[in-house]
Amino acid sequence: MTPRTRPHRPGPVRRFFRRSSWPEARFVAEMLRTETVGGGLLLLGAVLALAWANSPWSESYLALGRYVPWPGGAPLHLDLSLAAWAADGLLAIFFFVVGLELKREFVVGDLRDPRRAIVPVVAALSGMVLPAVIYVAVIAARGSTAYAGWAIPMATDIAFALAVLAVINSHLPHGLRAFLLTLAVVDDLGAIAVIAVFYTDHLEPVPLLGALLVVGLFRLLVQRRRTWWWALLPLGALSWALMHASGVHATVAGVLLGFTVPVLTRPGEPRPMAEHLEHLWRPASAGFAVPVFAFFAAGVTLRDTDLGALVREPIVLAVVAGLVAGKTLGIFGSTYLLARFTRAELGQGIRWPDLFGVALLGGIGFTVSLLIGELAFGTGSPADGQVKAAVLAGSLTSALLASAVLAFRNAAHRQLRGAEIRHTDGAGVPDVSQDPGDAPDPADDPGRGR
Image: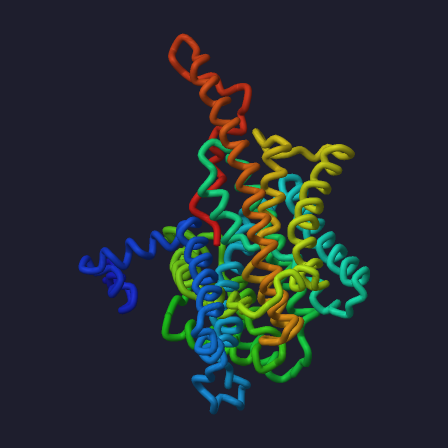
């Protein structure tokens, strides 16, 4: 006689979202998982901030960012303003999703195979080093002392970059998106390491140890597939609070939590837990956390600013040059040298003009660039305003140039595809042998991105 087993019943939260009376919520969640919608909301948050900060009501915008909702949170240094909560708190959700994607890339993605990963990895590292070198060189040449912002142009905003590529792309090679995604994953990992190592003013070992212990407990539960939301959510919040109290930027806790989640499935599991949690949390990241951060971070007031003098400021020149020139030359130049002097090759179907367009996309630095600017110069300082203006200008310039190049290349690939379809064989099957890279890659997941 076989023992009776209890039928599996989903938890109350999952049952709530599975109700047939909430199709609108599921539809909105699916929309927020697409790259174009996430990038559009990010842009909307930045535009609203700029409009409000330069309106007659700009003081109310500044007052909103300075408002402290919980002034009694001093024991764990939680007496933060709304702007600080957006940068330290909400971005932890974004970095948790980043951590999940990073681990998946290292375990089962392109970064698992060094032969496939070497080109975008080297391109990403070069695209981080050269912008920093250009920033320092411009600051030195202008006689400034603002060296603290050397890491600002290092970061690529993958939400914006993938959104631009998704809007333009209809006939570009499929490998182009995989290249950009792998590059951005390495870029994110480097930016996280830079924040943790170079932008930690003080270190409190006891809260840091407590944060690591809580992360370890979180890992124990998820490795044993204990997905109790009433336990995991408080543990995640506690690890964030302790990491914040330690002096390390609190978003690092999000990355560490993401790294603990298992990527591989066990027998009987419908899909990996990392994929499930990324699917669950991406709408909150793309639809709320990142746009709200952009709203509080991008509001630079330009009404009473001499724009001619602003564009001559060393920080502005250094950041724009680093994003537009440094990123492009670092990514494209290193890839060209690798292909020229080694056996490394581009992905199937990718041409050098295609790669140049992606290299320009790498100059879209927004979320992490603004965050590093605040850490380097402090929120509300004159330098902070210059950083915001520079990041916006450099990102917009890179986006426009990349859009022009990639739109031209998309038209060229469309013509090539049309010529292939016209030259069909006797059975009516298109001959795609001239450009095998346009064939879909089963390993490429078009639904991914942040």
